[in-house]
Length: 122
Image (tube, rainbow, N blue to C red; front, side, top):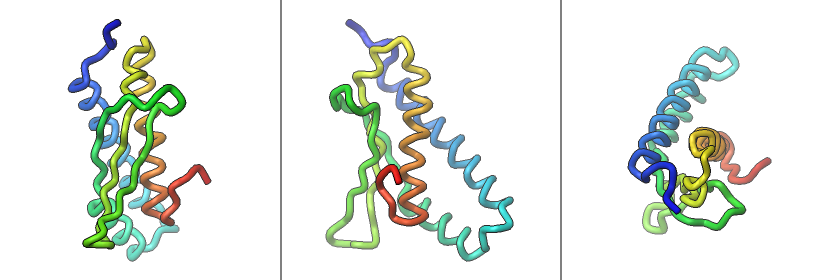
């Protein structure tokens, strides 16, 4: 059985979704009077510092994706954030919704980490 979409196209869709989500997020925080300028600078700095990468891997069928936070032992203030998408779901005819909504869900984990170092579903 062949996947409905090739990995390069899937990766492009995920990256475009991340760009749109990031732009929308910046738009929201810049127009929110409750967020101070200092907080905005911190959030912006952290987002640029932890710019997430995207990868695809077969990870069973329990998880559509996951956000992985990798601490750098040599430089503890630096961290790699990877959004990993499950290639098993590319075999579904609903792959477009999988790519869009899983990317947004994993991006929410990324934002939760930026705000308060939360990595779960709390």
